[in-house]
Amino acid sequence: MLKILYLAQDLADPAVRRRVLMLKAGGADVTLAGFRRDANALAAVEGIAPIELGTTRDGRFAQRVAAVTKACLTLPAKLRTVERPDLILARNLDMLAIANRAVGLFGSDVPVVYECLDIHRLLLRQDVAGRAVRASEAYLGRHARLLITSSPAFVERYFRPLSGLDLPVMLLENKVLELHERDAATVAAATMERSGAPWRIGWFGALRCRKSLELLAAFSRHMQGKFEIVLRGRPAHSEFDDFEGFVRNEPHMTFHGPYRSPEELGAIYEEVDFTWAIDFFEEGQNSNWLLPNRLYEGCRFGRVPIAMRGTETARFLAVRGLGLLLDEAGPDNLVSLLGDIDTERYADASRRVAACNSDTWVFGRNDCENLVRRLSAITRSAPEPTAPLSHARQNEGGL
Image (cartoon, rainbow, N blue to C red; front, side, top):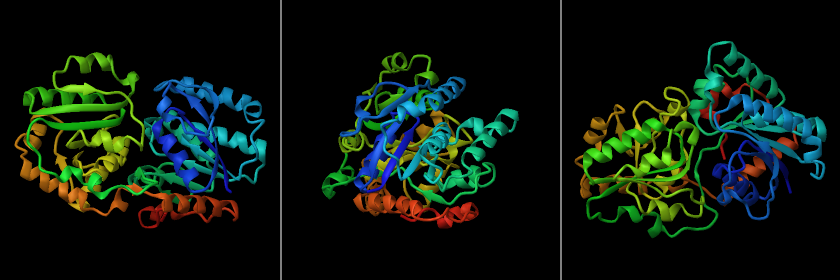
């Protein structure tokens, strides 16, 4: 059984929980260690007691650097009871630094895999600070065996031209984890006839985009109850003056808190008609390049995605003839896109989503096993040949 030490930047992140479940379902023995940002009991994984390396604060880079430095110093004590892993998986740059320290403790032949699913704005700056952070990433990743990322645009726009990394790439999209067969009727429930207003737009997951919140609020007020906005997940309070207060003052917007993924996805998506698959948090950069969790989640349950034209999400949908694309980020533009929606138009859009092969949206047990096999192969071989970053879209990860 492959023994993996998984180093996570936020133990309360539902995406970390999903990755641990994937690795366990694939047959790996996982030890989880990382930082705590806040409490989230829904992110717990049965049978795994994470090793806490410290506390970090969202949006506070200097504090995170200090926390990583301290964690590197205390790592021998933190990992003293951990059996030597076959492989270390480091999620994000913070944890890549700690992975290098862990290699020094366990032995230089323990391979490291770098998992990077977001490109922080600091990495894209063209000043001294940006160059320094990129140089640190290249240095810390110089002995890594594999790069795991979730969108081709990350490779095309950052890793290939800017990062300084020269690693084989595995594309591991943010698909819905399904370890059991699901009733097809439940998955396709959105294609049922709608009775009309109110239509509901669901914005679920990491809620960090103030521009989206304000746009959806203005739109729902303009539509005077024809549309309701349903929010679920974990708001990034560092990005909002008063998230809960803002939502309370909106007559057509509700926030229902965090949810358990993947177990509760079917239930929460059954309550909405559209998925808000737009993010302006790092507009023109990471937000334009990512393929978010909510894209796959909503489409898995037949919900019609709304994406911003010119983004990787829009490109993904346009190739498949799916979803609704917003031309400009203004309430009037959203009214033009959705204001005259009717049950017939909606049912057609939903049916096209539901007709897609489920593999487009779902990561199943066989995929989990293939992932662990791919990681196992790294431990049995010399470092993989580099240079496929220039051909990432053709050669990505093939699970």
